[in-house]
Image 1 (cartoon, rainbow, N blue to C red):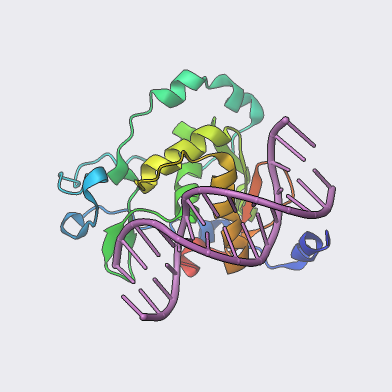
Image 2: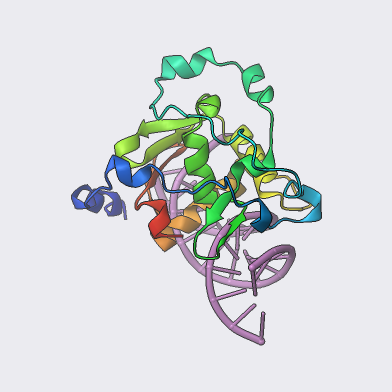
Length: 186
DNA sequence: GACCCGGAAGAGGG
DNA sequence: GCCCTCTTCCGGGT
């Protein structure tokens, strides 16, 4: 039963560049944004520059992670439209899927205290603060549910990607791994 | 106890 | 109505 991940050793791993610009974040798609009323940021001018910041693509050490306090996370301004992705197939901008969300948050150094790459070349990452990542996902998804999103629910969503082939099991605590370039799955 | 795993059913959107 | 993507619940394993 525990042999599955051993087989992955021989899998051809995606190169770094395959993980890189997998999302076309909206920049000039303002007229194509879809949304709902509860989380409607789409009618605002989204041609601003808040999504054009350059994000360092670094793997963070545990020491660096420790330096960032909980307060730092809470002070990060949330803007739903910042998370939207351009769906080339549908030709419109939409909220991200869970694997897309994970990739985006991993690439954003502001959240490195909550989630970071362990080995970016292999798509391996670890969640340091499951509760906060789940809470952020709830906000990004803008989904109206009665229950609060917890890590168990959040991780079940990730495990759904094992079936689709987007993720590989690691059997390690809070640790997940992308298998393929995300844009090849979406 | 906390986490991992996956089945099953259902919700919500396209 | 169908399909996709989760969300929720749950039982079993580590």
